[in-house]
Amino acid sequence: MQEEDAQMTHRSATPPNRLRRLAPFALAGLMAAGLAGPVFAHGDVTPQPVDTTGLEKLGETWRDNNPYRGNERAIEIGASAFNQNCARCHGLGAVSGGIAPDLRYLEKGDAGDEWFKERVTNGSIRNGVTYMPKFGEALGQEALWAIRSWLETVHEE
Image (cartoon, rainbow, N blue to C red; front, side, top):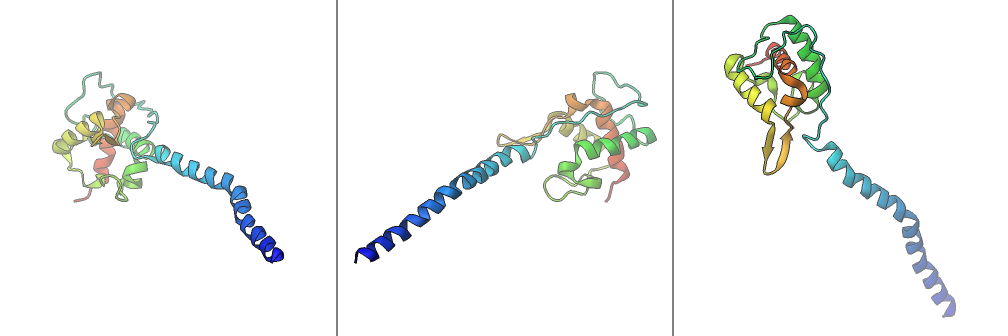
């Protein structure tokens, strides 16, 4: 009987010892998972600078309509700027994977400019959650109108 009790005690002591050895790894995994949310949260984005050399300076007051529409230099800058600042959520080539709107379907011309300007300058916040940060001050209208110029080249109906 004593031998059976000793075996039971030995067996019951083994799982807690294993758990003690695994606990630091489990804790590290939980901490990493908990920190991943803020790091990868939609809208938690650091804007990347855009070199707008070669584009007309537009000043402080935002234009209502895209002054660079059809401008080849603006389209070139816009393609690069989109990849650096927008593709993370809106997808490469503006083909969204479902996280954010597919910008290929943004209306062309002045009507689409109005929506674009509103969204890039004010961002998108719903129920206190940032879905898109404000990019107006961070990138400036030259870079953002260049992005809009490029978006019109990938437009789909």
